[in-house]
Structures are given as structure tokens and as C-alpha cells.
Image 1 (cartoon, helix red, strand yellow):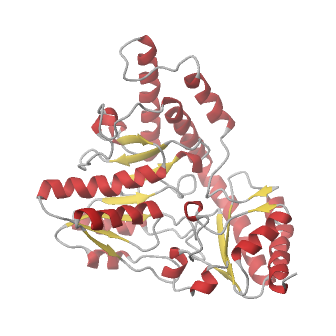
Image 2 (image 1 turned 120 degrees about the vertical axis):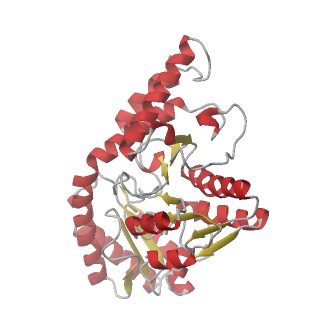
Image 3 (image 1 turned 90 degrees about the horizontal axis):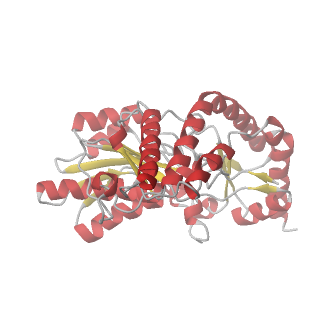
Length: 382
């Protein structure tokens, strides 16, 4: 089996598993407990936090451990916006795009529905890029947050982080980048963002651990209240083993990033070119150049994306139609619709996402041939 759905989740790295194991057994203490067992756990948690902060180029106290990317995005969007509203005493305004992950879009919808905040969705172009100048034009006096995905989870398009950071700085508005898909492929330090979301299971840590790194000068209203853990920004007993594993995974992904991004990007480009040459009416979705090295997403007009996936799996290839968080939905992808792709074509989408260990032999002719054969089978109705 060839697993090509790494944007959904990745296997746990062996070194991550080994680092976590002691904190699931003999070093099981609660880091808030004031005894030697608890203090050992607190030391491990502090070390993990410092290591994560070093990779991100932020301060140790900026790192908030969460249960994953969805919670990190919720905390960033709701926490920053609500804190701003509490400070001003009136509803605020949030700027985002229509192609964000569901956790960002649903958080923005919550702010509109429950708190009466205003939300502007700045349009993207046909490749999924948002123009920083249009983001700047959307800002208002009451704008409290700009939240944009650093790299899109379905089509792999990479946004102009520097341009967005410049707009945010000029407007004196915090910038949150959803970096869940970017981690391991793009530089996370030096983006200019005030807040970054990362999910452990995208970089070789297990599900259930993530990070929101948010600069200490940014007021943040917590979603979870209780014991005041994480500097009172996320109450609840910390997942020490998860935090340790996250730090190890993030460091490993950063070490591998530059070399693997170039190598996997070249393999992906060759695979994309071969699929487009072999498959009539195949269309690459997302930016053809500014895209994640490990993402290749297509529509195959005249087919059903789900049927193509079944044919691929019959041939030993596991991939997906898009975001795992939207799996099972009969609706066409909101990301593809925002690109101007017709609904009937959007429902033919197939996404291939590669891990860092993918080899040339995995993405050579046989994979593209399997795609072509699967599409042909679905189109013929056999």
C-alpha cells in the first residue's frame, strides 16, 4: 500500500514514540503537583515548551499547548477577537478568506452569530491566493484580527506571509497564520505573524497535541477556564507526554525541512506533469508554483472523485478527496468553489499528499499510470 494522505495525518515518528514513553509510565506526574513526581513532569513540560519556542523564533512563554490544530485555531480566532472586544467594550471586526479550514470559518461564524462581530471574507484568485492589498483595503478601525492559512490544506497554495505581516503591522492588527499544513515544509520562524497554529499529528507526533504560539503582548481570552494552566490561557492538566513528543517531532521536521522540501517538490512536480499529460480534462488545483512541496491536487471532470479514490485504493494507492475534517460530506469543497470551480467539477477532486520519506520510486511512472487507469475506469463505467 502507498499512503498518500499525509495532509490528513502522519505516522508517529519512532523517536517521538520513544521520547513520550517514559511520560506515559514511570514519569506520569501532574506538572501542577508540588512533589518530586510532579516537578519532574513540570521540568519536561518546560523543556518541551522552550524547544518549540526555539523552532518558532518566539519566546518560551508564547507557546500554549492545545489538543490540536482545531483547538489552536479556535483559541486564536475567538481568544484574540473576544479579548479585543472586552477591551473596547464593543463588537469588533475580523478579516479572513473563504478558503480557510473549517475550524477558522466556524469560529468566525460563531463570533458573528453569538457576539455580533463583523467578519469580512476577502476573495482569493483562481489559484487560491489572497492579495495583501485587498486585505489592507478590508481593514477597519475596529478590526481586531487577520486570520489566514499559511498554506491551504486542500490545494496546497502558499500565501504571501511577508505581505500579510506587512499589512498587519501597518494596520496595527494582529496576524494569525494557520500553519498546520505549513509545518515541516515552510519556515515557521520569521513570518511576522503574531500567532501560529500547529498540529502534532501532521509532523509525526500523535493526535491530541498541538500548539498555539501567540506573542505575549497580544491579549487572549481563554476558551477553557479552571486551574489557570498555560499562563491562564488554556486551563486543564497538560499532556506532558504529548508536549514532549510534539517538541521532538517539530525539531525533526525543521531539521529535514530544507532538503526534503526541495527533493519532494521535484518529485511532486514530475508527478503532476505526468498526470496532466496522461489524463484528459485533468486540472491541477491551487497555485502551480507557490504550493506546498508535498501536495498535488486535481479535478477530473466527468468522474466522481470518490469513485476514483476507490479505484486507486484497489490499485494499492490511498489518497483523499480533500480535508479529512470534511470527510463524508456530500457538498462540494468550499475551497474549490471559492476558486470559481463549478460544483459538479469540484466533486471530482482528488488530493495526493506526500510525506518526507517518499521516494522517487513511489512517485515515478507507475503512480501516474495508476491515476490514469483509475480515471479511465470510472469514466468508462466498467
